Structure formats: C-alpha cells, structure tokens
Length: 338
Image (cartoon, rainbow, N blue to C red; front, side):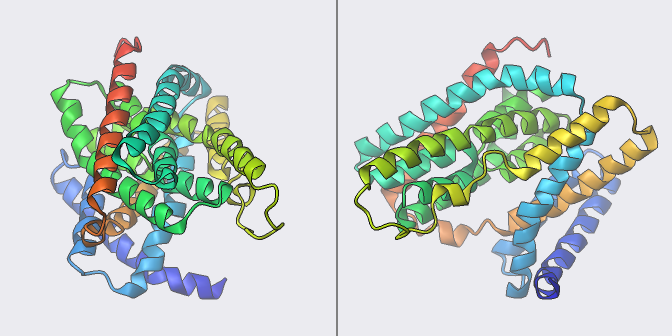
C-alpha cells in the first residue's frame, strides 16, 4: 500500500498544482471553466515534455480512479426523477448509437481491408465506452494485442478531438445544455472524454452527459458476453486455461462506480442532506473532476498517435463521423422542450 502511494504521489501533486492554477484562472475570468483549463494544462504539459516520468503513474490514477470518485459525487446532485427522465429518453439514442456504430464500423473495416479483429475492437470501443470496452472484448475473444493497441490509439485520438470539436459544433447547432450533454454522452468514447466534452460546453451539460454515458456503459456486459460465447463455441478444442485473461475476468456485470453513483442518487433523493453539505460535495466533485482531467490531458500524446497507419486512421475517422451523426440525429428527434 505504501509503495503504491509513493508511486502515485508525484503525479497527484503535479495534478493538484495544475488544478490550483486552473481555479485561479477561473476566478479571474469567470467565463472560463476551471475544468476546461485543467484539461488544457495537462495536454500542453504532456506534449511539451514538461511532466517527469515519475509523475505518469499518478496522472494515470487520476484520469481513471479519481474521475470515478468525481462521478460518484455527482450523484449527490441528482434525484432519481432526473435520472429516470434523462436515462429513459437517452436510452433510445444509446441503442441507436450502439447498433449502428458497432455493425457499421465493422462493415467499413471490411471495405477498407482492415483485419476483422481490429474492426471488432474499434467497433466496440466507439460504440460503447472506449478503452475499457476494447480491453473487455480483447479478453473475451482472445484478441490480438496489436489490434487492441491500434483500437485504443484510435479511440484516444478521436475521443480527444471530440473534446474540442463537439462543443464548437454544439454552439453552431444552437444546442441546449441538456441536449448537448445527451449528445456527448451517447457519442463520445471514454467516460473521461465525455466529462471533458460536456464541461467544455457547459457545466449544466455534465449531469445529462454522465447519465446517458452510464446507460451506454451498462450495455458493454451483454455485448461482450455474446461475443465471448461465440468465440468459446469456435474454440472448443482449445487447451483449457491457455488464455487466462478471459472476458469474465476483465469485466463485471455492473462497474462498482455505477453502483456507488446510484447509491449517491438514492441518498440525494431522500432529501436528508443539508444544502451546506450538498454544496461541499459539489465542490469536492469539481476538484476531483479537475484533477482527473489534468491526468486525461497529460495522457494524450500526439507523437504516438502519428504512428498509426493510413487505413486505421480512415477507419477511425469514418467511425467517428458515424457515431456523431447517428447520435445527433437521434438526440434531435427526442422531445425535450429544452
């Protein structure tokens, strides 16, 4: 435990300093979001080589685990009526995005002559939840590690582009805060990228974005289970335990942070929390999300992304357009009166 703490401490200290700077900037210019500034600081520092290698474990910890703490804390700002309202309507968009993107991406991969393995992993990452979905599917079907690396690079590249492109497009299309949040939640790949996209547009877009995104994440389990079963049927004569990293070991039916998020919503719905405590929890949520976004930004390495070949890039770009278009059309059709 102490060894792990000492490994992540330098990165968390760096993230804390970056967050302090972002809050100072936000206090000076109230129109500037501290979360957006945190993301930009992380991205600039990472790509300019200003972050020591000793800080990388802590920043990676922040972008994954502290992000999830922030999402759980967000639950204290929501009631079940809000979750049911947005989640129910967003479910229509989620189903459309998952079906069209998952099968459409594999079709595009065949047209481009990209390997079926890369097509499947890219389709899973784009349609569900980015890196975690790719990792789960790789384990379920004993996927090729090189294909997994390419797919992860693609969701990192185009998910990062979404953080800046979607808010600009949202303003051009005059989207409301809730509608944009639902668009981001149903189309952007990783949870961290969804949080970054939504907060870049408006902090009011964050809750609907997270609710719709978590609805989408839940669909990962059945999708991986189906493909894992299909793979097992074709590998009946394979030596037992030859591939220890199976899908059942790589993914749980419901990630713990989603369970805790729902617990937080339950507590908020009771009305037992005072307004002062809710304000404190909201500030903690904002700090956690800011620290996570510093880690996310620092992890976007432009130089590494240039190593991708042309056909995977074309696949990633076409799939990105497909998921954005499917999502925005579906979201536009949902009557929100907002």
